[in-house]
Length: 198
Image (tube, rainbow, N blue to C red; front, side, top):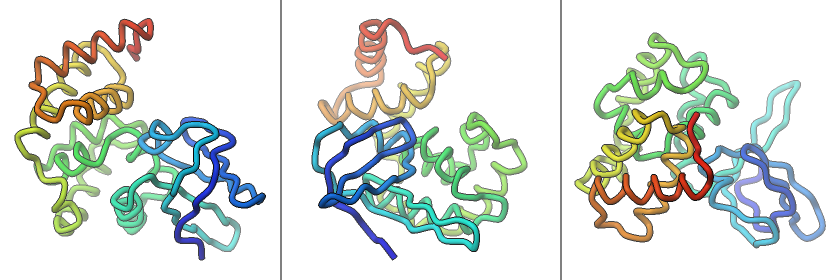
């Protein structure tokens, strides 16, 4: 079973990475939160979950150990397969997902394609008993600012996936940024890209 891979990114798509590990190409299915942190031709360390069933063998890659752990926990929820688990991690960053679980916020989860209210409630019910998994992602003042900025940008019609990635990058550059600063800088980024509305 493969636990991690270290190699050169030779192909990069929003949900797929092809990694050259000493001349062997490994195709990994990844969430958007992982792919947006990678670049072609760079050497990377990817945490790997090997998914093996009678008719299927796939490798799922994650930039962080936390993403991998949450992916594996989601697989234990009835009705959640690997594709849906990847969609959840692609649609929400870990902080947002943890916040939704901790606050029983079904609305955030139902924005993800394929998740209705009943499934969102089921995910929250089953994962709320595993809050220790999210101990590093309980909302803090900074994360509250982040969530507020993301909600405001989504309300303006921007895609949640792009919004989360952009706001996360802005906070990496300035962890003390206020909600207003995050919104203003994110809008400037989107304007420079010609708009990222959904």
